[in-house]
Structure formats: C-alpha cells, structure tokens
Amino acid sequence: MKVRACGLLIILSVAVRTGEKAALEIELCGAMISPVLTIADRALRFPVTLKGGERLLCRNGRKWAVLDANRVKVVEGMLNEKVPMLISDPNRVSFSCGAPNRAQVKLVKKYD
Image (cartoon, rainbow, N blue to C red; front, side, top):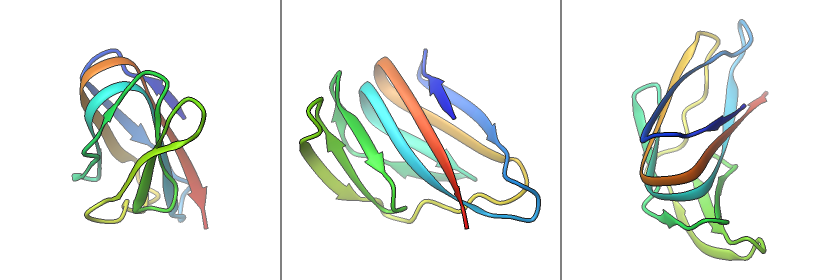
C-alpha cells in the first residue's frame, strides 16, 4: 500500500484477512519533520527530520534507520514501543508530519 501525503494528516483503514494478524513494515520517503504514524490509537513517533531523497525504514517492529539517496545510514533509533500487530478488523492508521514535501508513506503487511 502506498499513499502520497499532500497535507499534514492522512487517515487510512487497513484491512487484514479474516481470522489473521499481520505485522507492519514502514517506509517513509521525502522531506518531512517529526513524522508520527498512529496505529490503533498508539502513536509511533520518529524524532527525525527527513530531507528530500532520504527514507526511513522500520522493518522489524521497533528499530528504525534513515538512509540517504545512496542507501547510506544517516541515523538510527528505537521506537518507545513495538509497532502493534494488525488484526482482522479494519485497522485505523493515520500519519502526520511537519513540512511535508513529496512525502510518501509505504506500509507492507506481513502475515504469519
């Protein structure tokens, strides 16, 4: 799933197969300040400023890294809490950030 952010807030409903759970991988691209991804009312705050051409990756549920356009690690960190699992009901996901410029949010569901 890929969404282009044209403002400061995006709200999505992410479906998961009936009776299953899914982990979520996150990729944020483009210029933005202090991005926040909220899943099931749990705010995941990334205390970074992304420049154009940089991307933030969070693929293991807790550890994240910012890579430059050449895929060189610029900075890394840990979320205060693990990315929540998505359940089989519709999952409300929202995204906000400051000063978005060509911001993109990419979410990948990984089923058990």
